[in-house]
Length: 247
Ligand code: URA
Image (cartoon, rainbow, N blue to C red; front, side, top):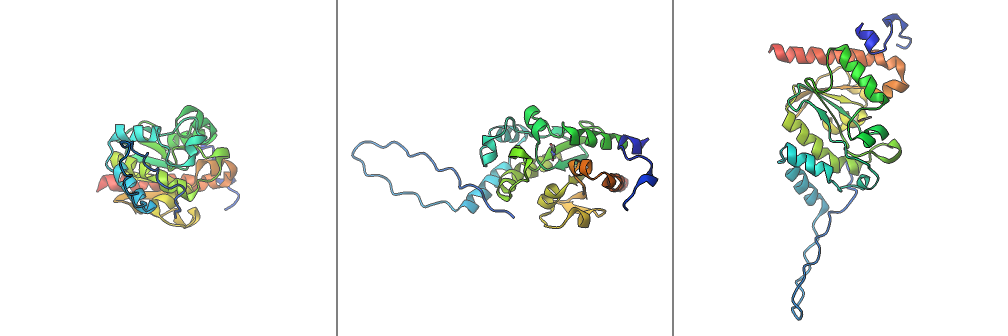
């Protein structure tokens, strides 16, 4: 039954086996001064890295409503020019499970909700297979809150500018387990270049929270034999969470 929900079919059918900064900080508008008064000396240029740390520190202190507003109005990278909606995240804000994907696609961009397209339907089936559902003990978010045009890969500068929002979401939710789905989520949260294949089947720690890695649902739609591995990963994740709950 569970395998069917994941569209895995019978098990015997298995045949095969950082970050550059995209944009300088916005410059402050020139202040009006009375006629005849000498212009103030130009402010020294702000090092972009320092400004970026300030921005991340500011985001790290936001509450839910401040964070939602910040994402809704974000213009920190070029994706704001092409998005239709920001995609903040959805689910139980006290969830035990936090699932992290990559970035919104076309349908997510149109609706402002993560994983509502084809990959999302697979994700919902995967969750149902382990008796979970979005919103019920589960929160779903992405590394990027805006759609990269044409669903291209996120650029390092976009990840650097957007990921403080995800870090803050995780800090506010305080999940018992993070499931990083796909390379961008895993590499961003673990600060690594390692492949999904190298990261699966192990428990990592993200700022004190156990984290496991699995394939991205969109990848699974293109690579059907790997659904069986994703199933293993989900069972592994559930075991990790049960182990924590027993402690
Ligand atoms: N892929 C993602 O990583 N996130 C979505 O929200 C949709 C597709």
